[in-house]
Length: 75
Image (cartoon, one colour):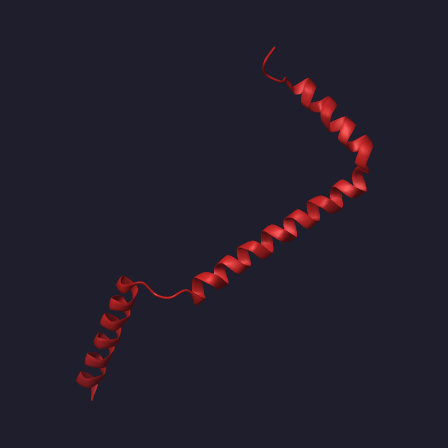
């Protein structure tokens, strides 16, 4: 009795569709999808703009040092 069966969820879904209609639900789903997409894009941009950790700075410094050493041996 405490848990809801699939039939309860189907009845709830039918009531929601009757109240809002499929067009409004489709638009709401599209808006939600756009919001999630924009959020992910902002998170990626934020990671690129974020200050680097000491470990990342050390790795870049090591890579740059190796590149300079390689360049000097080529000359």
